[in-house]
Image 1 (spheres, rainbow over the protein chains, first blue to last red):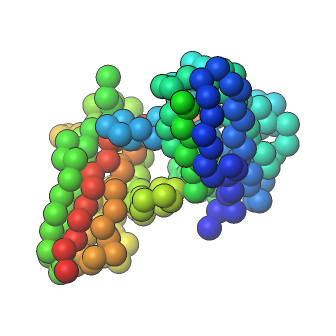
Image 2: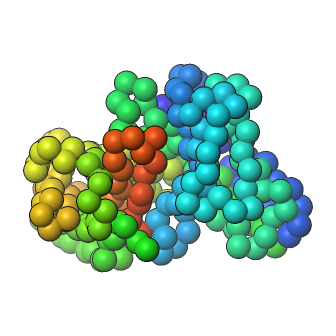
Length: 113
Length: 113
């Protein structure tokens, strides 16, 4: 258990509304990641962070922004949700002691109507 | 461009027999590979990994084999148990990639009692 929580766990929203998902870790790991999981695609990286206020884009970053104002929290924002952003979102941390392994949170299921 | 591919969407085996899950990759820079297991409504959990300097890594019932010349890795589960029924993802990364993981599409394993 890497001490990762995500909130909310489920959300239904309407097209055009902003949505923020939160990832919280208890172990102060430096690297945090946001992925989305869709059928036929596995998990794809959206954005990642390598420290407070240090973030970078991943493979599918369009339509998403992130912020990290504290080590323990990494926020993912959909500025104006679209139906193509209906997905399951996973947060992950990279273990500072074993820098090749990531541990995942329980996920947030988002439905955009 | 799918750099990591799991060409079998599903696999069904009998309890007690061997399960073999396969994964192919195209990027020669990958030097670390991981397998994750995912149950419905949960986040992926780390299973086993292998560095490119090795060709085999074992952990209990799980063994990962790496064939660098063929750019192929496989996960063997022996003996398979009904609790192993899940989606299995392979993932790859390389040094200096800030830990970003590239995932395959996943293989659903069903172990029948």
